[in-house]
Image 1 (tube, rainbow, N blue to C red):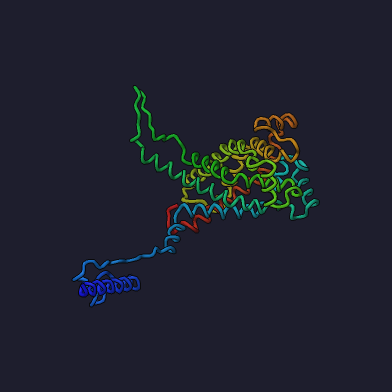
Image 2: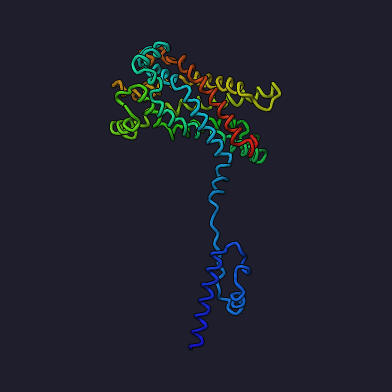
Length: 366
């Protein structure tokens, strides 16, 4: 019994020595990692456990993740949106005041009123929340657009000629070749970004229209939630989503189509920065003109409670505008909107393509 007990003690000691050796020298293989005396002992005792531990390379995993195409497009959109909004914040302030009917109906008059009432800083009223809003909005929007466009294109190529259904003499191609990946991507981009970031848009407009009632971002959130609940943060969501479909679809479709057509006509592989600026501005102008009446209704719903009369829904808001100002009222502030949308769209696309080149050109084929 004593001999057996001594043998068991030695076995345990050898196991502990081997485990310690493997933990402190994990780069060795199983034979080299064991001292000679332990190797000889292991031949006699098969019960010795060969244990190895590998710690994941977190840094390399992070670099691989940040180097993916999707992340690069997401970051490019965020940077492009932030840079464009920083430059064009005064035009956004004037446009919002004119759309909701606050102050002068002229661009110059609204500009003077802001300067006289709040100084030059008034032109950047709500700009902090605007920057907080635009960074995730543009990141989600561009990232969603690129991802959905790629996914639809890949699906169409994968199922082309394979997914067919015959009903009598009618042959149906279920790969839906008539669907535009760009249009689907544009619609998805607008819907997803709106659902995620709409509360920030509501707060931004409240800060722009009535700075005294909503002196800060945190107070605006609390007051809106206290007065109207969660629904208050999503005021005007329905007309926003409805208006976003034609706007976002047209916006991305116009840019991609014009870019492709121009490159084919000029026999070029890509646009220069000036051409991106021009085509981006044209796409923004077209999309804004088509969807502007819904934008007017949306703004009325979002800030109507400030004036003590909030329309019940989008149709009611449109009827109210027509009753008070006629059909021309549906395009009140359109000039200021174009003045803001065109440079904003052009600058955003220009910066987006530039950041994509910087972040992705070495790793992916754009």
